[in-house]
Amino acid sequence: MWFIQPKQDFIAEIPWRYTNENAVMSWQVSARNYDISKSSLELMVFVLMASGGGYVMSLFVESLLASFLLGFGMFLPFFLLGLSVTHYTTIFVYRFTETLVEVHSWKPQDAAASAFLKWSAIILLPVVGVLALFEPALIIAGIGPLGMGLMALQAGSQQAKQDNIKHHSFYWPDTNKIYLYPGRDIIGLNVPWYNPEQGKMIPTSIRQVYYKEGERESVLNFFKTRLPDVEVVEEKFHLW
Image (cartoon, rainbow, N blue to C red; front, top):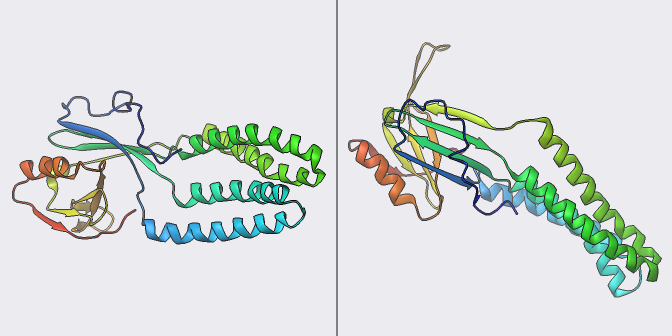
């Protein structure tokens, strides 16, 4: 669903602002820009709630098949809802020039989840309808697929209402320290910046740069070649 890397080439489609400067490196990646361990704990709460709801609904019927279908019909939509809430991904598209980097990012899972839930509901509703002819209690199982369809409709309408693409840029040659996040495909660039409201320089401002699995060396070499005197450390930093 939304856990795979996007195959579409977004780099050529992005309306880059600084096209007067030639790109020296660019890439796109789908990543989770948050603490995964915390999100996994939150998902467990959804799993327990979905399991409990599925178990309670399965008690309404006596036959084993009907009990399984009824319980699963309640469990699946709520599990998928929890998964989309706790383990969402963001697509990042980077364009580096010799002086700055532009980053476009957005969350694609709304559209992906909408399509998945819609087709799941289309497939499951007729199946439940046929089985309900033999076991009337299974009509309750239709609540699950119906709920999935409503969730898909809601997700689709929200997607149409708002454009969630974010854009930012910064002068990456101002980096004075490079961080390698242990166990994650993330590099942090500490770029000090001037805060006009405080009237002073902010010395610590780590900009996150995400990359695909297995590409750490190529991305790190890009920075080390151009910033040979900057310290490189392997250390965790705050993800936002």
